[in-house]
Amino acid sequence: MRKVIMPAVCVIALLAGIWSLDAGTPPDVDPVVSGSIRKPADLTGDKLFSVSNVEAQTACAVSRGEKLTNRSMRFAAARGCEQVWPGLSNAATWTETGDGTVVLSNAAGDAILTLAEGDGPAYETVDPSNAMITLNGAD
Image 1: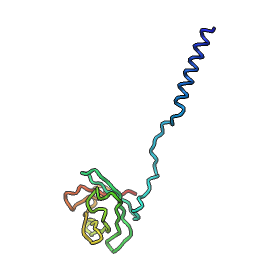
Image 2 (image 1 turned 30 degrees about the vertical axis):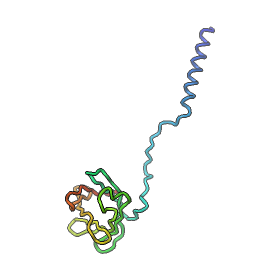
Image 3 (image 1 turned 45 degrees about the horizontal axis):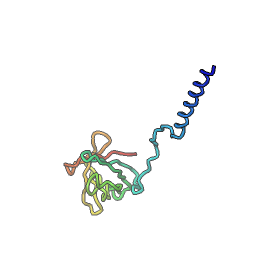
Image 4 (image 1 turned 45 degrees about the vertical axis):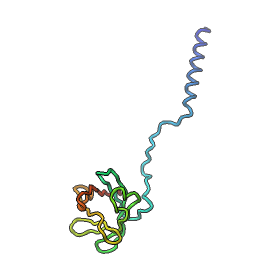
């Protein structure tokens, strides 16, 4: 009987020791938290967009705000938009031209990008012609 009890006690002690080593590690949990992404503080507009440069593989957030004139609305770009397209972080107005295109301009009125509605819900650049920029609604 002693030959059975001693190995059983050793096995139980061994399993208890192995189990106690793992007790301090946190469980595997999916770190993704949905619904908690805040709007960047520097974007105060009504409509949010994500701007992507296909060639540079960069993206940033922008917003279109209240009406300034009959065709223009306030426009704001988040920090980091300079990596998407030079001058984009200085864009101040979104102007609808009436022919289906939109011009993003700086405070001096200089055009930075001219966009047209794409096949889907996105806008695509038409000027400058070498810009591979898309603008998708984010909200």
